Length: 134
Image (cartoon, rainbow, N blue to C red; front, side, top):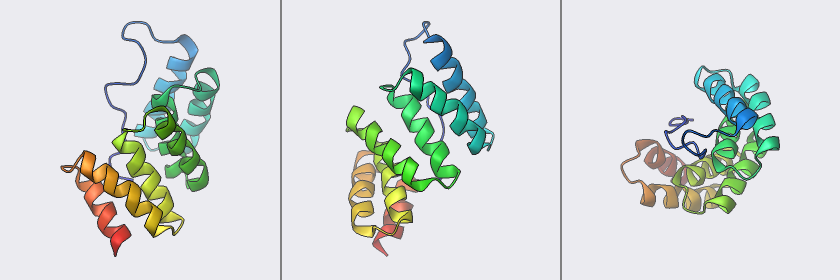
């Protein structure tokens, strides 16, 4: 999935990371960025256990699930991210991609349209919307 990377706002207070949860989040993000989605899932699931309301952890875990072909688990995590932050364009994109992969084009289009409206310059969003609309 194009565009799945950790941004500068990881949801942890600057200068005061939450100990083990932050360490697991960093480890999982590093593993995900290096292409090791399965190992990233393990680290990020531990981080989620420690900080279940951190959207940044749940978004990274959703990406890891998606990349490791666990689409249903990814869908559930993206939905939780949207519960925590309804205006998270990337979570709309990710959820749309999960729904598209599962064959629900109509629901996918809805989330992909939202993501595209929120960030019209993001080509991955536009490409996914075109794919869901085909």
